[in-house]
Every structure is written in structure tokens, then in C-alpha cells.
Image (tube, rainbow, N blue to C red; front, side):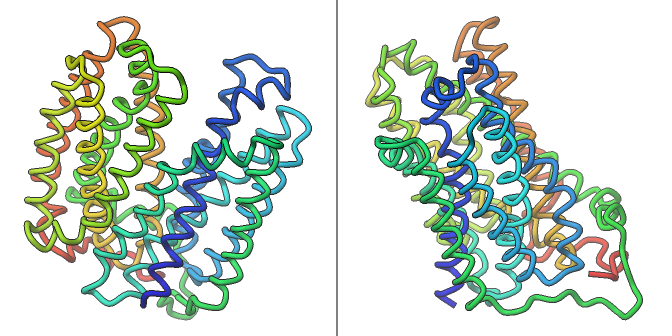
Length: 396
């Protein structure tokens, strides 16, 4: 089973690296294509938009197909579109290729979360979830320096490198992964909308996803203006801000790797409740600190805690209904991207209009507090297999 764990880690690492890759390249690409600062942001937004929108479609479709086939097609599309980014000759072609990469990621990443319970024994699901999430965390920690280093000679090199590596990974997945076909009776088909019905009609699922939205809204809002606050508060240059950002990613990676241990020791509910309660306090207090090493340590604690919480929450959500795990994973992905997009917008308003980063810290603390209450109210974390409405989705 180690082979699956390593494979899922590497898939999420590639997707995460591609997600963060363009950030350090943005000034170079802005100059290369001659676009304004405001328009340049679309080279990032195109990817997120494609991933968020198409995840809502990809998940329900994948629940009726062979997950292995969906993952392989997604990886191939991701590889080709990322390679094409390196050949983009204009702003609009870059946006198009980034959009296609995001769409491909929408078909790939949710299959990782949905496939883990299908190929791993029950005792290893939580640990594997944490390690797979660690792939994203490792990409967050290493994506910026990797992208900057590879682009030192030519801005296209990072895209070609990630694209070719993903192509090789698709070949490995083709060899290692077993078929994961849905249990569909002959002649039965289920529409995309119908696959969402068990989630829409379940109070537990609605509350669980609302809590998940609040969790990402709080953490995403705080993260959006970290760099801006560090520059304004401590007068840090870009290089030193990148160093602090690496600590955040390393914290998330460390947390994801010990997530299963925290679950065994405390249980899902207590681990999330204790962790998020600590985050409420840290988010509220941290903006008032004037010591950079202390701020860095607190950020490391915050992101380590988030790294512990996220795999637990994702595992609880995907266990709501085993027959629509792809739909649940995709909805979670869209919820995360939507919350992070909203969080970036809210952060800008708060930072400019309401007292800088202190108002962001209070907003994040309130979101996390509401998320704790909603999670506890929903009961999503209360059992290992909180299935809902499986009888109403017979075609998966």
C-alpha cells in the first residue's frame, strides 16, 4: 500500500506546485506580455476559476465512471496544458492554457481524495489522507523557490519541468492503480444534479460544508495579506517574505504528517475543536505583535495546526456517503477555492478600510469560532462513517 501513498503524495505535489508556480513568475510574465498589474492577476485567476467551476461537474461525472480512467485523463490533460503554458506567446494564450490546467486539476485532485478510501485499508485511510495533503503543503513550501530557481534561465522552464514530470507520473499511475469502477446496475444512470441531492437534503452535510466554508474563509482571509502585512509591519523585502512563507508551508506539511496521530490520540471531534480553538486565539492576537521571530513561530504553529485539521475534516466529509465520494471531494474543492477567493476580496477591504491586519485577524478568529460551533452542531466529525442518503444514489 506504500506505493499508493507515495503516488497520491506526488500527484498532489505536482498539482500544488503548478498552483503556486506562477506567483513568483508574475512580474516576469507581466513584462513579457506587456499587461497591467490588475490584468496580470488573471493568469492566476484563470487556473482557480477553471478548477472551482469544473470541479462541480467533474465530481458527479467521476462517480459514474472508472476513477482510474478519470484520474489518468486528468493527469494527461494537466501535463499537456502545463507544457503548453511554456509555449504561450501572449497574455490571452497563457490565460487559456492556465484555464485548461485548472480544469484538468479539477478532474484529477478530487479523485485522489475519493480513491484513498477505495484502495487503502480502513486503518490507513486517515494517515494516507494526511500524507496526500502533505503533498499540497510541500508544494506550498517549495513551489515559490522551485519556480524562481527554474525560471532563472527562462520563464518557460518551470512549466515544461512540471508538465513532463506530471506526464511521467501519469505513466506510473497507469501501471500501479487498479480499476475503481462504480457499482451501477445495468441500464441505470444518474444525472449530475441528482448526485448532489443526498448532500442538499442532509442537514448534516449542509452544516458540514458550511463549517468547511467558514474554516477556509477564516484561514484564507488571513493568508491573503500575509505578505503585504509583513512588508508594511516589518519592512521585509520580497526575499525575506518568501522565507517566512516557506515556514508556513513546512508547518502545514508537518501538521499533515502527524494528523493521523492526533486523530488516534484525541479523536476527530476533540482534535478539530482543540486545534481550531487555539487558532481563534492566535489569529486575534498575532497582528498586535511587533517581534518578527515570534510572529514567524506563531505562523508556524497556525499552519501546523491547519495541517492537522484539514485531513481530518476532508476524511470526515468524504465518509458522508461512500457512493458519491467524487462528488463530495469536488464540492469540497470548489468550496475551498470559493472561500479563498472571497477571503482575498474581504481581506483587501478590511486591510484598507478597517485598521489593517488587526481587523483581518479578528474576522478570521470569528470565522473559525463559527466553524467550530457548526462542526460540533453538524455531527460530521462524530463518527468514522457518517453516511447520508446512500439509498438515494443507486447509480454510483
